[in-house]
Image (tube, rainbow, N blue to C red; front, side, top):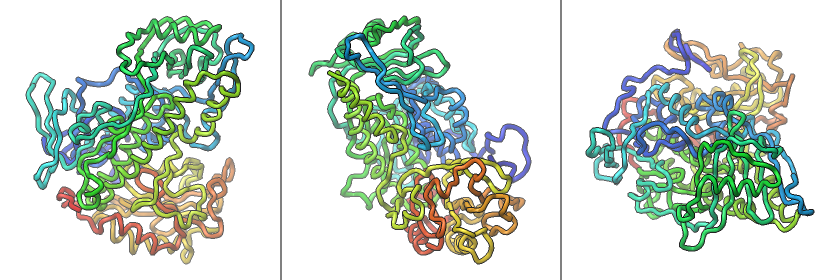
Length: 635
């Protein structure tokens, strides 16, 4: 963590210097976010980092969420939390899902047997684990990060959205009308440049757009409960999938704190005209069914902290923004929907909250870049392109997962099908299999062989390195904060130590004279848009820091202080060597371009200057003027 760049200050360094209008609430905003769940909070936390962007976050609820329904946090989500600065807090409190037990009926009729016990996450899938933490506690961390950001952003509660529509207003072309549910009463009208609906499966934003969630319910009723219980079931503190012969299936998810567990309990199928509420499900019914599925093991529930009943359904919107395909490229999208507002599915694979947060992590940096005058408005079209494709994949996966988990196995071979499916798709449930197709943001991967472990279109896969300036062992991916910057990760060729005449030095010269000179805002630090990092093959003790190009020792801030955290070396003492581990061509090296949301945009040769220029010319605006960032952005 870096601070003191523009002068010494005492106190908590995670509390940023407040912007000039920090905490101000007004009726004209750049971005209006409807819904204060994980999706809305992810977006708000990103935008709060930019004091020049005015953001309003509203919610129907009267205040903080006290008990949340979602709890599973995939590896990729925890990587995202690292970019926001609170991954350590999540990991300290959360339950870590280390192993999964699979239980099935004993062929001899004696009850249940453990069929398998496997690692939940395969080796080197991520440096972050799969964890379980109550959604309400996660909200706390987001709210703290928002409140500490330069905008000092806080939610506005007790606001029920009545309507949202585009208007002819040139400055704020979207108008939203809210009913005030607080003591003031009446209505409130907010004018915005962009609106993002993160308001759940009954989304008022989606309804205003005239969109519908399309799909069919599986007609399968499930119950879920968080309990404090005494049991002799041996895998009670492991994630456990139990398939019974006649009574359905049970999924056990241990909760944080060491004692509580969550149970997903399969109930009887619904009839065609039935809904979950028609069954009059009670907590006692759930306890009884769970006890019977677990038999002959004993389940003595002492307290039910929370419970609910629901039916499985997989539904999807045709579009995630307000621009039809016929208008795409001619009209800038202004209204977006994310999370449950545009896709719903079962909770079995633990993807709901994770995919919702990934939606808004995707749109957040794009909105910020367009509003700040850095990027062309066409990048906003890629939100629907990228995230709708991901949602379609999720729904197909969820259908298979739910079907196999609910199957009543006749023998060991049938029971093993679910285990096989779970193992095969572990990378998917960890959130690291997302791959965006080629677009203006994602390259073709022509030079993929230079960095085989950094697949174009997939998230940057972190690995251990040694920071040259202070010999600190760390993960390279942890330099990628949610600050809107592009990362240029240059992996040096064999023998290149950064000296004049080498490819790293030549790359630094091109960036300084061309790319940075053209696209970096006037008056900004040299790395305020492009954050170059170099990884050399030599041991850190054999490198000469003073021989590095000036761009790897940049002078920044009002005092021109030197940033010593741009150069890295492999961790040759404890390993693994990042060059071998991530398949970097040692003879040629590689340049990995990473988007602000940590996805690999392109892999190029270190001297691929023309390709680099072409790529960024298609996305960025030259010489943006910070005094004009509030101009209306037009196609």
